[in-house]
Image (tube, rainbow over the protein chains, first blue to last red):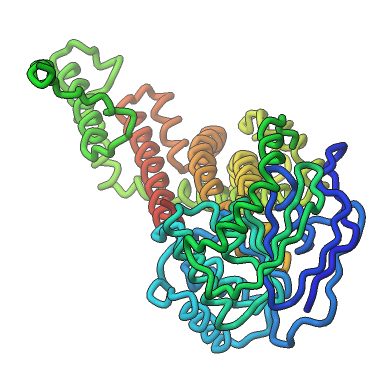
Length: 255
Length: 269
C-alpha cells in the first residue's frame, strides 16, 4: 500500500504550518522527514495518520493493505505513550483486544513481537521498571503487533540518549532487513535520517514546504555508525538546512 | 609553591542538599496522640484542668468499655455504619458517574458544571427538613442527605481527574483504532483513578460529618444521637467517647482508601 499526499496545506488559525505538500510514500521504504524545529514535521505526520484533518489537500491510500493488517497506519510516538498500569504484554494486548482475535491468537502475536524486539523476558514488567530504550522497544513491538502497512514514527528516538539511540537504530534496521516495512520517519536528527532513510524529505522553515528530496541507494544494513559516505551526505543536508535552522531558532514561538 | 597552597586551603565541601524530602516516620503520629492524651490525663488528675472543661481520658475510656460491655455500642454503631455505607455508596457512585460524563461530553459539561458549582456551597444540613418532607422522617432522608453531601465533591474530583488523563495516551488509543468504549474503559478510567480516589478521601470525611448531623436532627440510635444526648446532659465522658468513635471511623476509612490506593495504583512510581 502506498500513500500519496496531494497539495496539503494546514494552518492553526492564522498560523500557517504547512504549504502545498505533495509526496508519494512508496511501500517497503522508509521516508525520513527532516526540518528545523516548528516546521510542521509532526503536524504532517498527524495528518498522514488521520489524527488531524488538513485544511486543504488530501491524504490518499493507494491500493489495499495486506489482509492480516489490523491497523494500516500505526504510530510510534516520541514519548512512547505506554499505559503505565499495564504490563509490557498488556500494552501490546491493548491494541489487539478490539479486533476479532481469539485469546490464543493474541497471545501468539504478543509472543511473536516480543521475540522480534528482544523483549520476551520483560513481558510481565511494568513501564516504570523499564529504561527509555526499553519503553520505545515496547512501543515498536506494539506497533508491529497490528501488522501496519505504514509505520508513522514521530521522532521515535529523540527522547533517548545517544548510546541507546544507536542500539535502537541497529534494531530498527535489523527489523526492516528481516521484513521490510514502510515507514514515515520524522526526525530532527540528520544522523538518524541518513542511517534510516531510503528517501529524505527536507522541509523548509514555517510554513513547511518541501525543499528537496534526497534518495539514498545504499542498503540499510550496510550503513553504519561513522560511515564516511553517509557523513558526506549528512553534511550536504546540513548545509541545506543550516540557515533555515538558524532562522527558525531565532523566531518567536507561535503555537 | 602552588601545590602547598592548594593543600593548605583544602576544605571539605559542606553538604547543603538536605531536607524538602518527606520521609515516613511511623510512630511519631502515634506518639503525638499519646503525649496529648497523657497531658490531658495528668492535667485532669492533678486538678489543673477542671473536670468541667475536659473529662479525664481514663474516664472516657471507662465509659467506652461500659458502652461496649452493655452492648449499646453496637446498637448505636450498626445503624450509623449502615447509613454511612448506603449514603456514601450512593453519593460516590452517582458522583463518579456524573463526573465521568462531564469529563467525556462537552454538552453535559456545559450544562452540569454551573449546576454543581451552585449546589456545592450549600450546607447540605440546611436541606435536611426538605429531605424529611421528600423522603420521610426515617432512614431514606438520612441516606439522601449523606448521598447528596458526598455527591458534589466526588463529581468535582472525578471530572478533574478525567480532564487530567494524559492526552497522548488517548491519541495513542485513537491512532490504534480502539473503539470509544475501549478508550474510556481501558485508558480514561484507569488514568483518572488516582484523582478519583483522592477525591473519595474528602467525600468520605464529609459523609461522616453529615452522618452525625443527620442523626442529631432525628434518630433514636446512632453515634450522632448518642453524642447529642450526652451533650444535652453535659455528660462529657460520653460525649468524648462518641467523638473518639467518629475519629476512629475517619482513620479507619482513610486507611481503607490508602490500602485500595496501594493496590489499585501499584503501577504508579
